[in-house]
Length: 134
Image 1 (cartoon, rainbow, N blue to C red):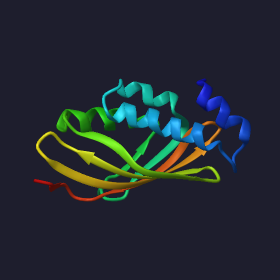
Image 2 (cartoon, rainbow, N blue to C red):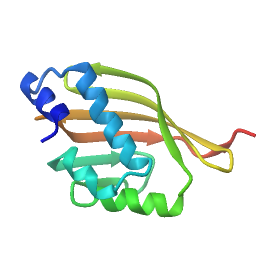
Image 3 (cartoon, rainbow, N blue to C red):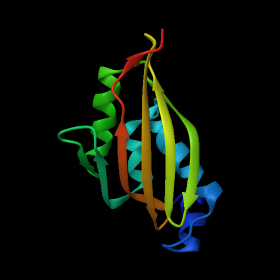
């Protein structure tokens, strides 16, 4: 278990350390931005549930999350994600994000991550359609 997970785990289910929670989210974003997709399993609970509200079939589990990332990166190899702003309340991390592609397209997103035992147990995300910034 990572130091970040241990720090979060010590605080319990209703309160998390802001810096550790943000670091955990940053590690997940690193996976989306090019790290090995299978490394996501060390950052989420075994019963993880993800909900992509902008997609018709947008639910994912701990067992399918890595393949979601790999499939997305195959279709969008030059997309990079970054946090615009973030907040931590109780055991949740709220993130406002932007995704940019090499061809000048942008998408804006909101993500809520629920933390349990030092890991992400559930996420709710919604993203805008891609638009050109040129």
